[in-house]
Image (tube, rainbow, N blue to C red; front, side, top):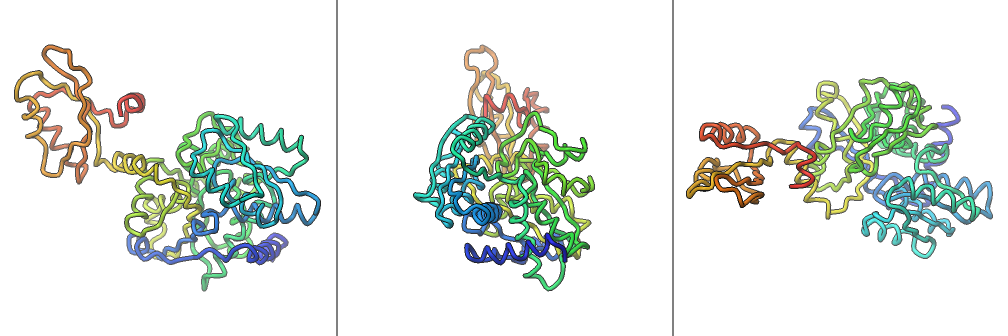
Length: 415
């Protein structure tokens, strides 16, 4: 062993004062589906439903050890990091000031307040996270607090490595592959640092959301760079710039081992795990499972561990998740249909629908035209190929239509 591995083992042992190891569970459904031995490291079952409690605990513990008088900790977060910091503040009985964007869902604010109790204060500042972060850092300097970084901190990375320590302790041999979600890189850097020593033969796969590929951008540039625009749907991993310290650990990752997960496809994984397995995953927590299809040929017959990094899912988002999953899988589409303004035109259209086709949306967009009226129509069906049959009938009947399912601008206004 080396110094990092020894420290990771000691750090993990200290965490037992705060919470029990999260389960490592073999998943029979996924194992059968991919003809592999697939295990889930259930970080969604930690006390704060994510792995973030680990880094927050280790960083705060080390600060308190070096400076027992430090009793003010500050962070900026709209989600899991805030909840982990709040939980640990109460554990150490210190003060925490947590800055969150004004737009943070009430559910996340309430959960953070519940975990921290009287030990924390929540300040809602800024419409965007960059504004929130700047306010938190300014306050921290003025108030003499210690700023707890969500990922780009050596003690946080060390704390996240405990995921790998627990993983190996629960297996009777090293896994062939570990699949890790990547946002700022704290989890993946910590796990890699430990496995490089204790299980160097294990292959590591890193998964980023397509709309927040900060590791991919950094690998291309040879250093961390800031992505101009990110899709915040995968809020637990959509980071505009990977950490400097974390990239130093991940910089040698091969391109074939860094995968991008489309946001709509992630929605399919969330629904499948909820409906089939009863497992609630947030978008970032579903990343590692989401790429199993891409890895099918590489994982057959192998032991694979997927780290399900979080389960803080707001069920008010479920309709959006279902909608995006259906559109990605091709069983739901939206059209603008030019409907003749004559008796029986609607009936003619309805008779073209197949037995598995269902109208989910029907709205006239223009009612004043003399000969034609434009209709926004949303259709659901049981299989994507059913749309080919319907469109063939529409073409034969000389109906004019436009598929706007993937037209981002029109969809924002009309759907």
